[in-house]
Length: 231
Length: 231
Ligand SMILES: [Zn+2]
Ligand SMILES: [Zn+2]
Ligand SMILES: [Zn+2]
Ligand SMILES: [Zn+2]
Image 1 (cartoon, each protein chain N blue to C red):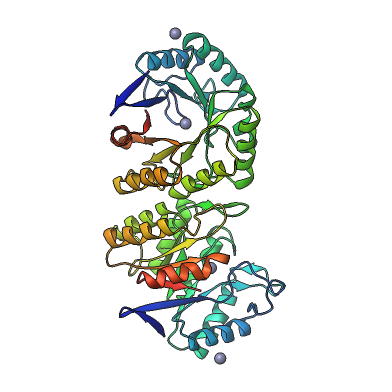
Image 2 (cartoon, rainbow over the protein chains, first blue to last red):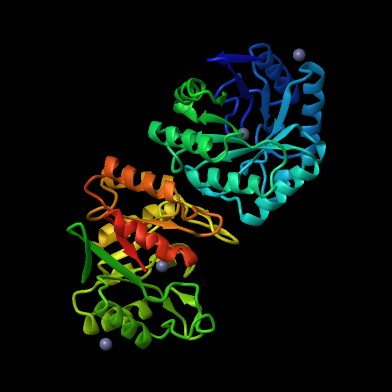
């Protein structure tokens, strides 16, 4: 279930589908629920402990349909018993509160953005009232958020929110690097992120995800620094 | 025109009006063009070198009306000859390209946001195509941007944009700290900002603005660290 560096187990999270790639980009991208369950099964056998899941419509376009999330959860529980199921509440799959419409299914975890930032061609909008609502829904359904930190202030906002009791469970922060127009995959910034997590939230867990070409580089940084990682 | 710390002249920028405070908040807030010109005159006599200007409608609400900016510029040139005039292109005073409608007036400087972030109750939206357009307009009219950095990635994006020739004149970055839901006024972050500017863009100028209660604290940090500052 985990790789180990210096005695620290490393949690591997596999984002089986994401919200962007299509079959035309890569025929191996799992789109149907059956494909997603089997892809997750293979990931778990390869060492993944967390499955980060988006769902898709029949045509491959991103969706936040709770029925699809329910079917995926049922398949994962049958084929990958014990795996940690994390649903995406990201803004590419829906708008407003539709992004959290699957939270009553009580996945183990769900992604949560606590700030806004630019994406390659648009603004990734996470208005404060939506962030508050998503965090409250996660508390209501006992779901541990994975904070998606696209910038430094998102890390500080997550720590402050956790300290005031506004996030369910342990604090789990993911550094997202390499999205065009947001934070690049930058070593000095990565080191500062790690140091700030240690100083400000020593009991928290952190992981890191590099987007696109930055993926393997950021994986290596995270594992070597004793963090967790997403592929 | 300037205070001096350790032989380095400190540029003082005065934001005479801003976009938020009303006469009901503070009767001294200058709203009419006449009030703005006289407030700027007093600021220059007190040592300000840059006037950061928003304009208002008759009722005090924020505006981006080029005619008002033109009247203000004319008044400033008459009452404060030589002062550096900086117009705001901030999103509280207009939407989309209306935010840059006054740039053909060729102020010396204009504020420019290069990323998006949360504000106290909404998203501060600076979509990539608008950022590109505002930066191009500033190049067209020979206007030096003041980059408003509400988060760390904004600083890195500004440096990268300047390196590829996408910003007119010298790089001038303002760290904005203390806006609720964005970057707090945090000493460790401030120190990292300063260090990163020195390493990545040693020829650039930087200044810092603390919002609300953080104003004087951030002013002191900036002056002591050899930067410039806004009040
Ligand atoms: Zn995702
Ligand atoms: Zn299976
Ligand atoms: Zn302003
Ligand atoms: Zn005068």
